[in-house]
Figure 1 (tube, rainbow, N blue to C red):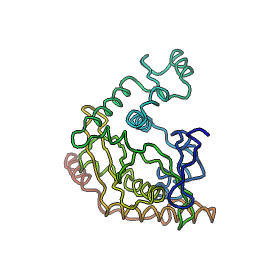
Figure 2 (cartoon, rainbow, N blue to C red; figure 1 turned 90 degrees about the horizontal axis):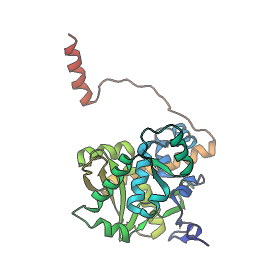
Figure 3 (spheres, rainbow, N blue to C red; figure 1 turned 120 degrees about the vertical axis):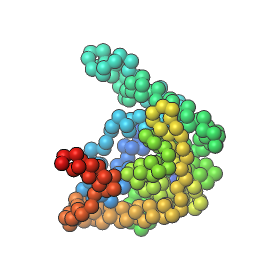
Figure 4 (cartoon, helix red, strand yellow; figure 1 turned 45 degrees about the horizontal axis):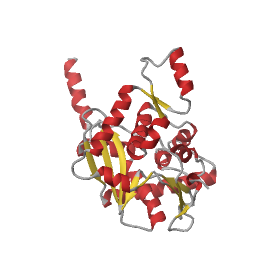
Length: 285
């Protein structure tokens, strides 16, 4: 049996792991993942819409390329191709796509940014990240069934070892005050809590520390490590359980509603918008 189909038994009953490819992991429709599950907290209908039409933006493709460059460098050349012919159109570009079927096409600038981010991560001065990421268990797909809801789950932590989980995140600004907005906007705390539950079941360990490696996409590719506090993760874990319970309820009923009681009064704009609005009003007087 090849490595991709070898089942690695986990600590908890029914939990197991596979060393499968990123494509095989994402092709699984039997188990829910954090990227789609967190959408159910917006509404069950939004969750179903995401499953039916998964996003595949350039930003996501570059994020996948970054993961490959840092965690699975042997896959970078086989999974990605660089188009150096200028505008992505015309017969030559069509022939290039055909010759590189199955590979994601990046521009030279995009690949340079990916490699620049990798170099910045490996040059981080406060920890020997190349050694840690090399020694850790990377891109292992973990599968389990949630006990309370019965929902089948899957997670693919970037890297874990010796009680620490590392997760790569590209960002526009890695500084704490700015990156905290990304954590809230993209649900990185939700993802962390979900991954930690999978790791707890797979390893039997309860004391993992979750660290986000934030790297800026633009040069000079600043890097900042953010450790998520137990308080933040506890709140996120409650959201995970709420999402799983809602998923189970909708699955049983066959009803996946959009917003309920979608009516409200708006009495105040965000602080940043209030000052801009006042300036705009003054300018029209």
